[in-house]
Image (cartoon, rainbow, N blue to C red):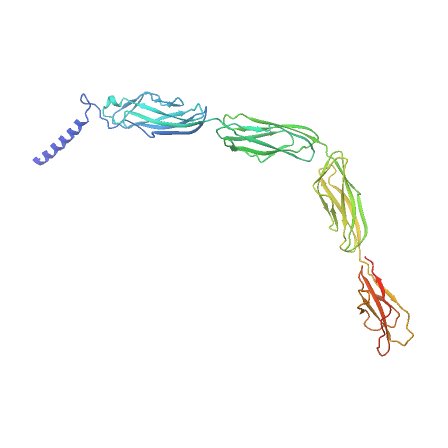
Length: 434
């Protein structure tokens, strides 16, 4: 082996010796350490926790030195925070870790803070340890437990007829600090239902929810029940009492039972009056229908409630659209025991009357080929001929007239050469209405 190689090894040996000398413990010898206790998080925030409840977070502590050390029992500066695990004193080998379990149990509604101080014997083992004592900052907010209140707590529907429904509103309110999770609704009693309420549902602090409770009695008599709401956590059960009475339905009569309109001219109409009478209890008429479009109902605003012993009138109109007999029925839907209530309707459509005007006059003594008839719409003319050629007869029937009109007629005499006399005296004809 040459001298240069031995010189290189000597240099290396001297350098190593210098490094070991720099890290030797007082008193000489012993394990070395390059660090102390480390934590995976130096700041733990527990967020919002209900007063009296607890929340747990874990923080990992590690022996970052190259020598074993002992961690003494950590201390928390605020009683709302405590160390639940592990057991102390705790020995950690170099590089070894342990989970530190910290529990936050707020006793007041406010923002809370503190810290956990972790002390070890790393100073005694290694005087140059970089982290012999470790602090973990803690924070969290205590909030009051949510509450659940119902308004009203007693719901009375009074008397409701069988087959009808009555609705009442109910309001749930959370007036406290934490949210409330309504997880279950239990409804007891016959004929009671809810609408607008589904579970699960969450009410935040200060939030309200309004929904409906509906009573639909199935039979006469008193009914009672309850609405119970369960919320998660420590929120007490909320109960609402329900009560109602089912009453016998009333009766509805239609008079007359049959409407007979007789003959009505097509294009015209005829009215008849009918009545609806409630008995036993009030009746609410919700709708009316006609099975035949030629019969129409009017004069009754629906829905309409008729008190027991009272009546309401309506008008039924027959307007035939074609000739011939026709029939149908008018039906009333209601909450009456007799529902639906109906009446039969009949009528006959007749063709409009065909009017005509008959004229006659005294024959002329002259030799004539015939007579011409003229008509005007106002007295004194002008006139228009209604027969195109002279007619030898001394009478004429005008079938082209219209109802409710007045006409004015004159006649002239026409000789064989076609010469025409002056107008005769004027006559007026008034055509009646259909």
